Length: 434
Picture 1 (spheres, rainbow, N blue to C red):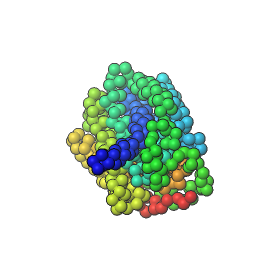
Picture 2 (picture 1 turned 180 degrees about the vertical axis):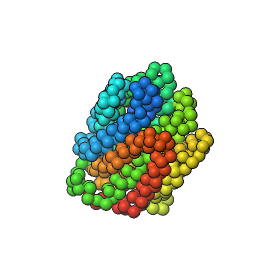
Picture 3 (picture 1 turned 60 degrees about the horizontal axis):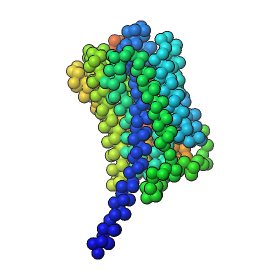
Picture 4 (picture 1 turned 60 degrees about the vertical axis):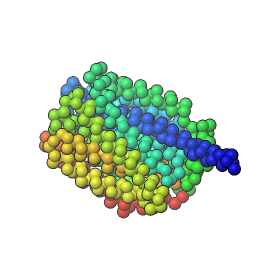
């Protein structure tokens, strides 16, 4: 009887261990996203030296952020279609090589027109990154786990800016600001080669056991080949109320997100007198709050579903709405504190709530969209966020140049962030019927 009991427990233990390989895929997505955001954040780190050496203004730095956001936003629309049409592996690898080349180009030019062109190319290349991740997640994870999986890889958008200050400031002090763009560009090309060699869809992976493959096929996950057909045409997605709610809600989210991404280092140096060497520490701390918000927000949505408290869609809407209200309060409070310690604490808390919003929003695309159109719906949402949010860096730069203060930029950004709660709670309410 003892021998029989031991024999019976082994398969269970093996089966449990077998259900882990899918998380390896998330780690690859996380690393790719970190590289993606290093290539965005290097501008904000290099900005003080670029302004000093090349005579650029805060408005011009903001304009470079806006140019990136516009090209990034506009390319979301074809990017989602390309991913759904040609597959995740090919499109993502080519996109990595493209945006890495654009990053290196940024370090090689000196004129404002050339910088604008390089940032435009960067936006085009980076556009497929996060829609691809959302699509891959829909292959590798059932719906109840997508919030947590998405929270992990979406935390890359905070790991990048968190790592960027100490790492890139060191590179800039040692080698100059142009080296930031060269080194991060080369890193992206190396990763692209590794991803192309490693990544396979679930049904093609030799490292995936039958038990885990059966598990990830439950509740909506599946293979790329089996999810290629849909009765809905791409242009018809804009007829759905939930899609418009996602567009408007993500616009409210990315508006304040872009202000943080472009101006946080400058805000700390201009308002609180943080030196270049100190910037490597202080500018990275708030993004740690973003990492926590991403992962913990995804964990909470998974727990709500596991405990049968609500549906996967409603769990994410709850997380977004509560986080949006909290983000609004905290961001609006930033201009009213004077100490550096309290400012860092509020910025960290704000990014925690904002990140919980972005993670749940990306995961929501997998619940709202038909399985074959996850990348398209995710990219349309991202289009709305970055096309509208593209105005925030240049408007924030104008406010700073005209008023000499960041107060109005933060207060208006906080109010707009709070409006995301209205969009996701009252407009995004049901999935698209295929």
